[in-house]
Length: 97
Image (cartoon, rainbow, N blue to C red; front, side, top):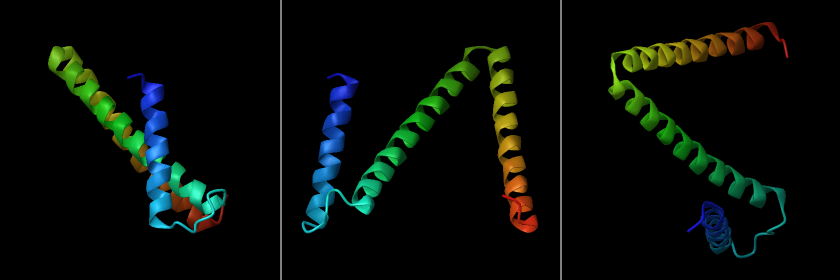
């Protein structure tokens, strides 16, 4: 089955599930659409993260240079995340936007 077809089926199933939860819900309301979009985003983000992790593990297992490169990338990502938390903290502290 093509990925596009799978996605359409999944979106359809998600909409049906949301409608089953609240049959009186306005399907064109912003909240209804947001819940579906957020749910799909969460699923796609998890799938993407899992794929990225799997690919990194594959590279790390390939040879010592790959393992070293993956470690450096993971450390860099971790540092960037810490730095962004500090930036957010400073923005909140100093009221910058």
